[in-house]
Length: 388
Ligand SMILES: *Cc1c(COP(=O)(O)O)cnc(C)c1O
Image 1 (cartoon, protein in one colour):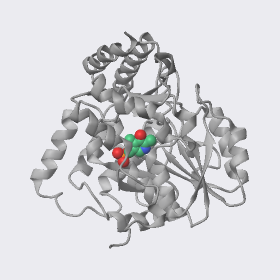
Image 2: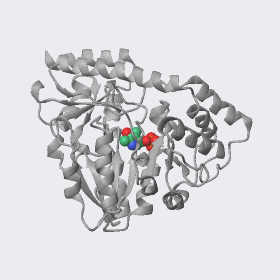
Image 3: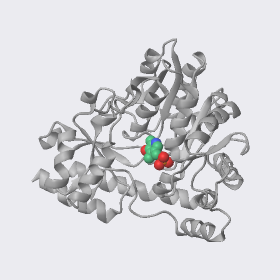
């Protein structure tokens, strides 16, 4: 007998729901509206730049642990151009293996065992894992369905003397809410009053629809010195497999995060880094075109799901629509999503895996619109079997 290899700390961690549902999608040749990856690659010139970097023979060995200088400069330029945020590319920017590593390294760097980490509930699944790995205690600030509105009173109620850090995500996965400037100002007031750190995941910063606006909380008064802002090339350039991400913030937070990051991966994606440096310098029209295209796809999917009788919350940002399946005669999203690929030929993600209390999201299913219109239409056609 070999004793169970799992440490207690990772007891709750298992295969992600994304792998499970994507595997079901492949097995049943289903239209995959589950996992949030685009089905068309990002700009040709960015891919060509990576090919050139691979062939040049100058980018195939370890990149510096903090990222190559041209990429750090491009990240600083991007923060200035889009957010009016000034950061020093040498001391306030860290290149990471996707936003995922940045979040994990930041939590490991800033959270001691027993520290409380307050996070918006539902959460992206890697937060739960990162907090658990750090030995922290997760404290939810629930965004209640159906509109998932943020309420600062819930944040105030979640704070205790053991609260160390607030983990934010806006535009938010899976709900699609975008925290408004007023929300962020209210959050900033609480954070300053209780002297908390903020880690904010802004990977959907360029995917904001209608007249919503993405405001990095780091740009609010008093916040720059206590906020680590995380983003990534994956969603902005439709290159999720490249796993090039970054963190920007004050030197002590960047330094601490880097200290952990260097022993997770040291560095990664050396030939991809110069290509992403170029991508971040693409003209404004690229970024505007991306959100316009995604907004049309959002509308297509929202209209289609509503047409099937689902109750849908229209997302202000991100990749996903949340739909209530009860009007279709179902009440358990997990059972629904396990049935769907085989019975209907579509894959989706059950909401309940994102919630502190799974019961809150039991009737909700997350659908991705990061797909070509023809694919969304094919998925909707198949889903019509449910309504019929
Ligand atoms: C997709 C996603 C990530 C992952 O980013 P990578 O750069 O691929 O690691 C992180 N946070 C959220 C909220 C996401 O949706």
